[in-house]
Length: 119
Image 1: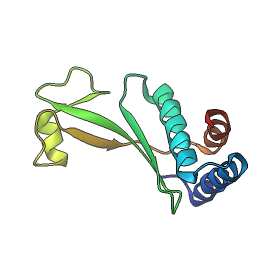
Image 2: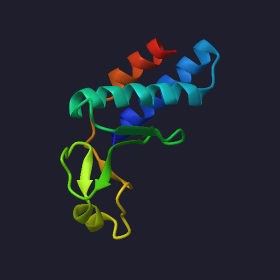
Image 3: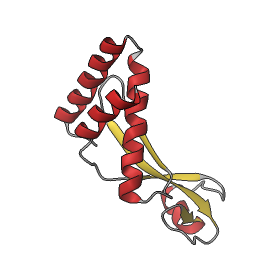
């Protein structure tokens, strides 16, 4: 999770860019989440299936790697064996995806730059 000061900063940046460019705040937040996903991929591996979400009300950021459930994993950055997946979710089946939370990164600078560049 991003600390509360960064949460507020993300929302303030999104609001400022949305006003400046006369576009919907949700579009700005989606662009910021996309840029954060790209930054996380460079940190955790470009082959990783990483998803970033920003809560538009609180600014809370969730960063997670989605792992595909397989019988026997060959690439642990993209796959999780069925037995380990069932430890997390007893109903897991082959082909499902398990969300693996990732530790927080400093997103403030990335978000600010990306919001201005992507828009």
